[in-house]
Image (cartoon, rainbow, N blue to C red; front, side, top):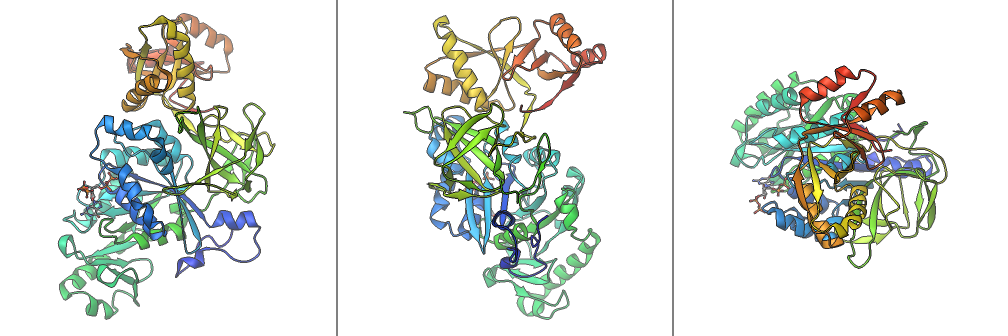
Length: 542
Ligand code: G4P
């Protein structure tokens, strides 16, 4: 890693390296690209707002709230989704504090899980896991955590809503450790609880963060420091000393273990009361990694390399209904992006002009003059760019790791009017490229099948087919409950398999062979019968 990423102590400004680094290395090392993962209602929106406030983006907070209002019905959600302005503007939120540039990548907030979330997590270097102090680990927390684990994304835990009645701290920490099989280390320890919650004790660098004292921590020599007794009622001081003492049974913070994704430091606070946010941000700045080396097909790409590289992890279409414009979100992995550059799309060898790369602040889009590793920029295009595409200044490499997951909901898309068949195909292709659904063309020539991870994706697809392509459609059930990508070096065996099951096989959007199964039992049978084939649940794009 580049030097200077971790400051041993003190203010955030220590985190930004000085000295003889190239511009690219310096800019990369002060960037933190992260996402917030949480079960709905844990406080992701409120925390996002407060983080933006800290970053001096105060006027933008209302915008986030507008989007994050969780009491929405499905149709409300779709209306908002159609209002691309808001949706896109909050896809990436950039804010700066004490020289550290934070890029917060928004994951869809709706509880219906979508592939967008998976893909966004391929573009971050760290995640903040928000847990409701009264509820602990919930279903969605676990699901999102598993995606992070696939990529060993370092996770900082924020236990939120400490201002309310919460569960016992030891119990919460044990639950994280046991249900996620993750080492926990308290970075803070709460002082008081529920309505009597006063703040936290900093376990890594003795200090009291007290709600009453504002955002400035009171530095201490340790738990014995008599300042604690001056600032905190005797009973709370005693409970704190006891708890913090017992907490030493947890493993000490280990930066390497955190960076490898096997240990999470735990912070406590209240997003609503704007408490604990500064401490959390400090943790992100000090411990979360700056952009690191990224594996590509032929080599690992270092962020400080002068030539630009990046990959597309998300496409947002039809932002302006009058133009069939799409914005591709490019995560920069190395080098410097300059306005006006022409980049090479390595999948096709085509040149892609980047005349107006868009930077996203919580409310506004702005044309960026330049961008650096760890940044995300939007590139408007007419459908050339696809999810998973690598862009370079000319080098022929492909980044790995924007995954497709085998969808479990598989439906036929039916139309009443045969005349719009061609239009439907085009529309489905475009929407599949954008990642709205996965598209499969059955080899027996029957109507197209779409696959989704979350059922809400189906609603969005139908709505957009109608609104943007004037193709009314409906879904028909299929007998299948799962699919797998079929791969093998043995092409003859693939062909034989294909012929043996013409009604249960299809080609995906990229022409790869897939097999549909009605049950696990059937899939197991196929695996036994065709030992020379692999049936994959996860496929990297391209
Ligand atoms: P989400 O994005 O994760 O779904 O959660 P969101 O921030 O929308 O918060 C969900 C609810 O929890 C909101 O209340 C919010 O005010 C509340 N909340 C968030 N953080 C805290 C906290 O630290 N302490 C307490 N006590 N509450 C918190 P709501 O009543 O559903 O919405 P609203 O009417 O307050 O907007």
